[in-house]
Length: 260
Image (cartoon, rainbow, N blue to C red; front, side):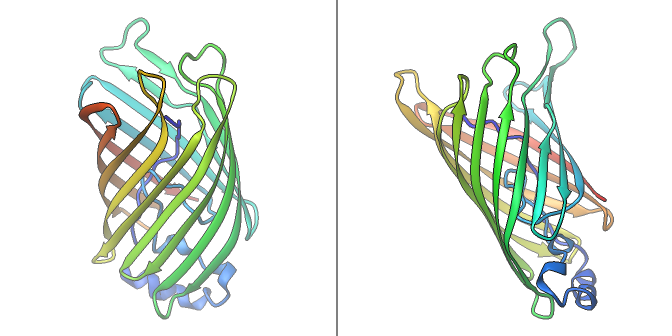
């Protein structure tokens, strides 16, 4: 399965904030789209921004385990940005010997090919390309090095919005399975401060017991709340399935975002 560390949740800012952007959102490249929409938990955002994220995952099958994943986003110019996924930390409680571990790190370069918005109509369209590399020290079993290329998109028709990503992961060494992935979502703003969304993901990066390639994916309903224009809190409930396994894996995701 593809190891991805970037997880967060689409939401919209206060309704008034959408229309207040008209003063400076005259030119497409100056339109700060994430003032009214943020990324989904499992979808890379197609806009460029300066922000930090902290994601937490708690598996229902292992209630004593917790995984934390920090991420940084940077904006160099109107068209170029970056993503840095710091090593995720996994722990089983109570903590003891061999009860915690660090995961791989990843970094990517983004190119914004299309960034168009019309705040007067509450509309925006974005398309961005990214190349991302993942590095895993040899001492980490089950993880490996990889390069992923993908295209991300977003469309806003206030109060509705949709976004997604699709790409391919190429292994560099052992521990990663080559394959494609696609993820998309549909969401709606509620009173400007809240947003609900349903995310759907699928990929063919599962290797089954017989050695054949299998499909896997998940559904994740999500809700987000903007504490302030700079802070966002989001929660999602993930139901994941894998080909060849007749059991649904449930986990709860949380996300905290801070814009800079």
